[in-house]
Length: 140
Image (cartoon, rainbow, N blue to C red; front, side, top):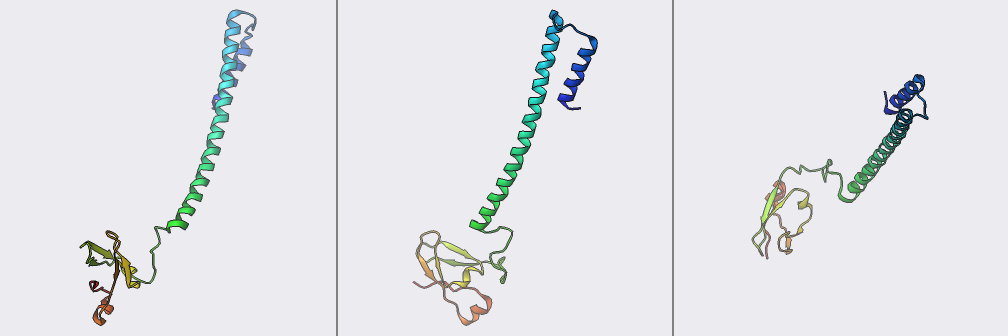
C-alpha cells in the first residue's frame, strides 16, 4: 500500500467516525490528515521525478560512453586485429637512457618519439629481426 493509499484509508476512517470538523479535536485530526495527504502526493510526484531523472541520466551516460569511444577508442577492442599485441619489445633511448616498451603495433612505424625526453628515434631492423619483429637499438 502506497503512502497516498494509506492516507486515503485514514481519511475514510475519519469520515466514518463522524468527527465534527468544527470541534477542536476534529479540526486537529482533519488538518493532520490533509497535511499527510499533501505530503503523500508530493512524495509520489518526487518519486516520479526521480525516476525520470534516472532515465535521463542513463541516456546521458550512454551518450557520454559513445563520445568516449569515439575520442579514445573502445577499450574492449584491440588497437589492431592483425597482430598479437600481448608481446612487448623494448629499446633504450640513446639520449636519456629511458627504456621504451613497444608492442607490435608500434613497430609498424620506423620512427617513434621517446616519451621521456621527446627525442625522435628511428628504428632499424635486421633481416633476422624482421622475422621476430624485434627492433634493434636506434643509432644516433
